[in-house]
Length: 302
Image (cartoon, rainbow, N blue to C red; front, top):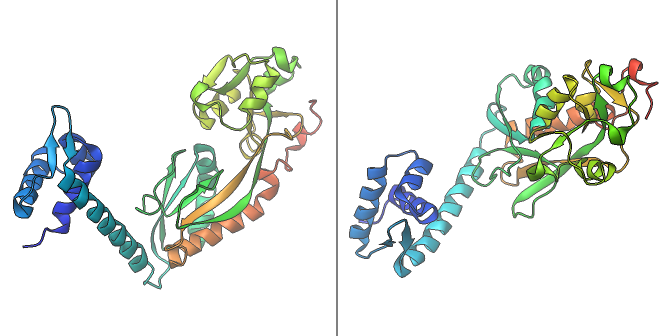
């Protein structure tokens, strides 16, 4: 009897995760199930596939050989899954879209109109900075600021996001010197975010007095009057509780890319959402680039 694909998937997960507990969690099965299925696979093949160390399972030489073959099988199975999804000709079903939290907030703001034109599509919108695996269909579409060097990924540039300084009017109207003003920024683990290098130079390397790890946290802190913040213009300009301080910061911007796996770009429901997102970015270009600002903010100083 040949090994079943279900047993090989369990073997593959244990080889990757290293422990029964983490493999079981990744697979959504019980701890004993993983142990039992691996033992049955070893008995069926007639060779030990893992060395049982005190803290983890390590593939034997035979296990390494089987691992390479199983990974090739997995790659083929994923490809079949993606390609078979494209055989349908209906614009319906679920489309998973992943973007950063600020961009996800912008997309969520426009979901009513997206749903109006795509009534048969269910949207799953995930706010995340991590790169979802398009090959495994953890997401169908990604919006990111960089194009990863991964095979099979097709990228379309959506536009460019501008950034500016924002504060609650009660704080902005005091007209403090920017260098001496209280600032809101990202924590050390997120110092790579747009505008943070500019802010560090302004403060001569000093850290902002309020720090967070999420654009929406910075936005709420600024709205509450906790300090000045560098924010994407599409967040700051559309918020009536914030006042823009000056124009866009010329050296701070972020290109936005729409990413899709090449096997999914022709899938009707994915293609329909891609087209709708592209149109949305084209229509909102002025807001994204900081060219649209409320009249009450136009005369405020830099």
